[in-house]
Length: 372
Image (tube, rainbow, N blue to C red):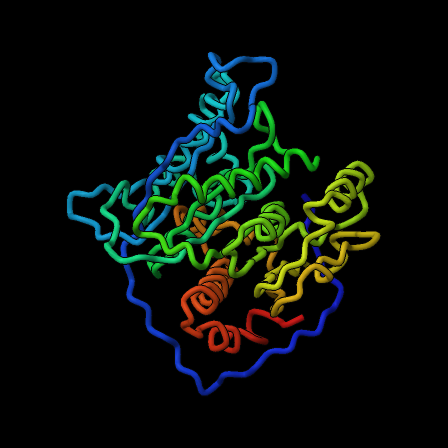
């Protein structure tokens, strides 16, 4: 998907310069996976219930506040990235995923011109595998991945959220069999329904407060997240990380598919009365062309906050560039840190009433971000 850009929009922003940041207790970031089969949906056509892919498989990756013991193991990047190989094989009933994570690691290093595959794969995360969950109850954040993106694409953000007292469930971008996402409304619906079903899967988790649910999406996941927000009763806020809910017209086939989504009930009847934060890229001028942009703001009736991250590119809204540079010990920008700080403080404000967003955003205005 191409980066999405907005037409100028005036945002009323209340200055809270007298406020002090609420200090948050930091936890360890626990990590677990949940494999589920949704028997309400058929995944592989022309099969019966004896086929293990007849019903839709669903893998949830969950980061949560934990009390880690000295014996708990910290995952390496290879452990998280390796989920790609396993699931590619499982979802396609083939060995197509064999070696993909190593190839992907090499592509990351080449693309970001930093480090080497071995260093990246052995990079130490802050995720403690199956660590004991903290006894308190925490707000839930549902994350929807980018176009054909996997759940790990923003794992560093999820670790930070877990450390700040949120449970995060990440939903990969998996369409109809054999799992490839397209811009067809039917594939979008599968990712959205995966998010909705995740609530049912987690409903018995005593460590989750379901009264307020935050929704975050990156790129295509911003569009999927917007649709999901209209279907989840306790959705309390929406965060778009350079999301595709503002469709960039200019490619005939993609435009036709988006119009199918736009004219479907999922988007046509959507009206959000919840707080909405959009952080978007600001690459050098003249690098992209567009005919027009779908004005998603017409769907938002709640409080709106829109910011541009100075000089940030679309890929900076995933943690991969940050992780590759950290693993390779390369110099880089702080775009992802800014994006992470704004996202976390917005969720703290909307889900935990900690009122941190005004202070953090005011600190960043005209230094790293610009209001729109």
